Length: 96
Image 1: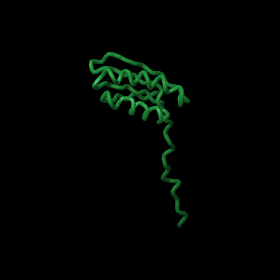
Image 2: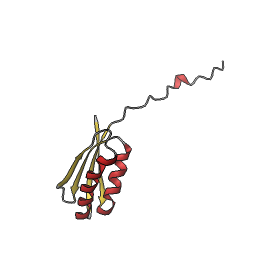
Image 3: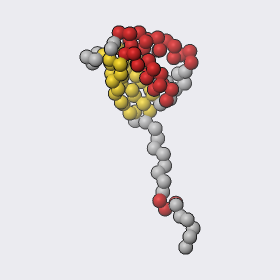
Image 4: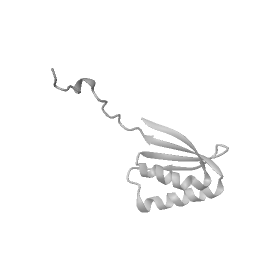
């Protein structure tokens, strides 16, 4: 199941934040909305989107950033598999 988060971002910070989220590696989809809620850009991301493939996305996001003073970014992430919790019974010291 995917996890969706919303962030309010200023236009001049938009590209940097998006690059940060992409480098986290678990982002599957970005939706950038204007302050009045209109969708301005939707970017589906797949695993392995790096390097030269980021350039057109970055250009589009930069264009959107130039148009808005503030926007909302909806970030859809792959939900990470929960790590195995420490089992309190496995912490035996061996002392009797």
